[in-house]
Length: 432
Image (cartoon, rainbow, N blue to C red; front, side):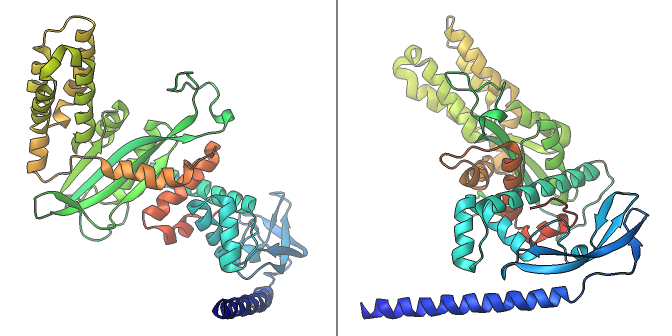
């Protein structure tokens, strides 16, 4: 009991000292930043080729990691643009925002990591800063939207050959790109007119497409490929597949696809994935996820189980062996030898169409001999970790704008590029 009282006493002292130091630091920061109002004379260039005239000094309150501060800044007005100009805000990186760069980064970090209300509590408890959940939400989603816009512009320029990524490190020995999609729960307004997969036909989610690029340079002792540590980078979008393809190609180029010794595309059997692969990466090796393909065999066998009878398990094992060997023609021939009557024959033919369409993407023995991954588990785990753990928590319903912004921030963080975030947001002009 005495030890607990002493601990509580120390905690109280820590909190009191932190509060005092934060207040002192805020006062010092206010003095340092406020020493220069940004006054540049009676008239300055507005940035659009016109002259903006000095009006007066105006005060504005900014949130910082040391608490709120009030700065007096020179305000100019351009009669041609009908807009105000505050040079000091631009100098400080706080133009048209109400947060300092440090607090903005803090809001984005907690906003992409945890629900906004919890983020507000964490900032208050850990940093002693009062920042409401709604303000965190606006800031994180707005910065995420700006990140999306910057990424879209970069991707379009890169794919058009107008922007060349600077080479980083050695050329990758093997570069993989795995693609998949996952549903994100949405508010009713985002689902109007959309059909769902449930019994009632109502949509409850919107699909976000996710791609992960990663590299491989070695095999383990058993001859299986090993993903290079910390080599994964992610892109995601709610936009149609055509736009997603541009983003994925740009990311692949950024990762060195033009210099890679070998490039591999991984995915399940979804047609949109292979349409994008053929369009953007026609020279790459295309591999259908082995575990999805195996599941198709099990699903087909269940549908004709009464016909197979006691042969069921042996028949499935034989088809799986053919699949693992990449002998798709033999697999399909064995299924057709059953000489099924309709409608069972129709069911089998529909199932076999999946294998025949993807036959060249299922030469698993050849792929393994080349030391390739044959599973898309990396992107599936990405769907869970990057998307699901933030956007698909119990009770959540998103607007597309907000979900897309948070997904963009999470991809940036998961790619190990958090510090590069601010380079893309230098021209951020939204308010929060």
